[in-house]
Length: 121
Image 1 (tube, one colour):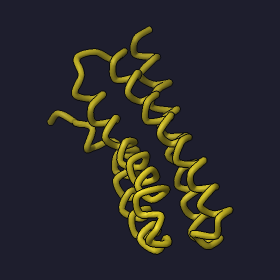
Image 2 (cartoon, one colour):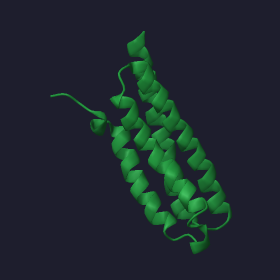
Image 3 (tube, helix red, strand yellow):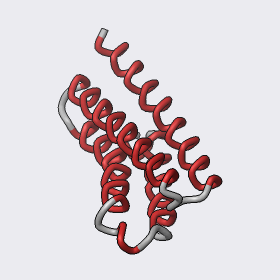
Image 4 (tube, one colour):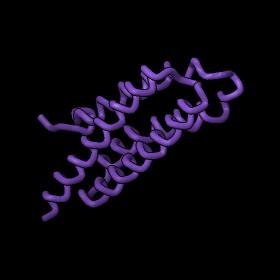
């Protein structure tokens, strides 16, 4: 049985994260729907999307490149989440829950990158 990116724990976690983030940002002020909400959702969707795109590429180096893009989107989202919290668009519980999940995603991406680099030699 061959495995795919859909079998990766980090991919599954990021898909769940996007779902939670969408629910959280739905509570933001309506005037933010085309501002911060849109940016946060795009950054969140970018994380699993780049995992999938990288896995579909031919080589390990390309996959690693897309994993780094996912890490960049995660960092972008952390910044946006902090701004949303500072603007009181989200409560402390949601903020901390999302930050913990982003930390976990970051560690998993870094681990996958280390593993993929070790395969290259």
